[in-house]
Amino acid sequence: MHRDAVLSLLRAHAARSLEPHEAAMARATIEFVEAHADCLLRSCVPGHLTGSAWIVDPTRTRTLLTHHGKLDKWLQLGGHADGEPDLLAVALKEAQEESGVANFRVLSSAIFDLDRHLIPARKTEPEHYHYDLRFIFEADPAAPLVVTSESKDLAWVEIDRVTSLNPEESMARMVRKTQALRTKSTNS
Image (cartoon, rainbow, N blue to C red; front, side, top):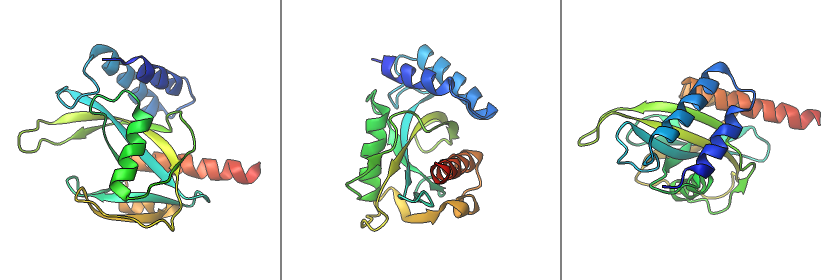
């Protein structure tokens, strides 16, 4: 399975100035990908790669979140690579499928954020890790949304309210990065 493109993305992300926790996860993810030729497949039992979309509106004041059906929490949209080495394409496909929105603007082909999180065991699926490569997209908040069977709800949420719905550090980190983008664009 071809992992060179994923490793290039990960190494470029790891070379950026990251918060210590994310830097450690980047190193761990690189080691995981190097050690597991099947890292893009769900059958890789210790864990596998996923691609997610952090979707913002043009003003960078809101993000589109899904109330995940199985995990019962508000999250960014995304899903399994299922063998696809282009994680940006995975994130885009998942965003379209999970929201019903057809048009997204890719704000960067670089990784926006990276997270490793434990997925609890369910039925025949053992506990495992998701190594989640997250990309930032822009969408029109006026576009109609379609709630699928994978989620309980979809909503555009004010960036400053995200952590009241999900206080996890990975969500807070994406909020901080979005606020920094907004500050950078207003100062330019």
